[in-house]
Image (cartoon, rainbow, N blue to C red):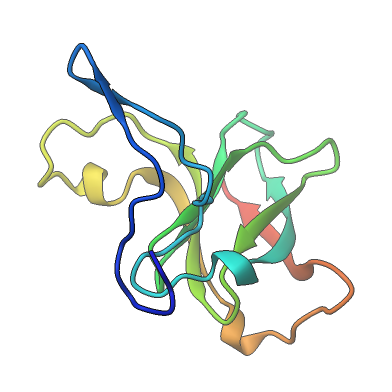
Length: 142
């Protein structure tokens, strides 16, 4: 996407091999949004995850709600801390413990694929020019 013209431009090609397009995309990161890109402005957020009944080993993700993009399926470190890259002043959902029950796209499970979720609104938190914004503790009652 040429940000000056607003049009897509061809910079490379895909090769069709056995009906599979092969190529390399180097300009898009996991939180890029074609409608309002923030890839150049991603910020770090951190929080501590505490499970009330022990760590079940679930991956955790940050899924944009005010933008299209996600960063995640990470495990907290030994002390329960985890970091994500998200769009500044955005709203996103933290999701833990992905379910694998999506069969029918109309199922509740497909539209809510995480067992545990919480919503974060960064517009209510001050930025941290020296590093990650600390979101505090997310206690998951598992």
